[in-house]
Image 1: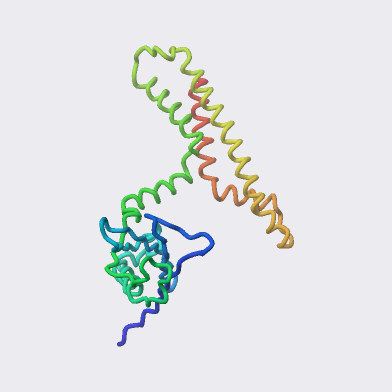
Image 2: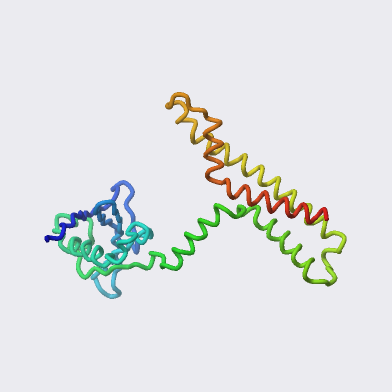
Length: 241
């Protein structure tokens, strides 16, 4: 059985002539790769060799290469080679702005800007946790309160900076402030979503702006709100005990 033919397209451009990009005092051009739902946009950057008129050209892989390729990550070398072969085969007429007007030659691929697999996984985990954990503004308060409560429960020593009688007040204060900040955060996010949905409400009949805004806000940040509220209540209860 014949294997399916892979259809892809590679193109080259110099960008907007009104706003040319330069690097290492040389013009930067762009290579574009399209295959199905894959779209990668490379930069072609040159560096003059010392004591020479020659230029070393590098094809810079975009930061989102790993994300765009997904399960096709193993085919990256094939895709890079297709782009390099295309660039090196460009005619002189396509390279009017290229220093020397000569064709690209001996192009190398630079993937240093592409995050490693580990950093990508950690970022994905961080993004997922951000939907559940308190926001960056509230997390330090909640974390400090839980740390104080833990230390008070498990370590019996004098608190030179926080007298024993003040621990409960501190926990109560942190819990109340966290809850107040949560309310302000929820109100701010509600207004942001409301402004974003306002245009849609004018186009869709029977669109209830308040109801839809509330639904989207809860769907997006509901777990974070519940967990933050529960932790704030926990600090308040520990402060009152």
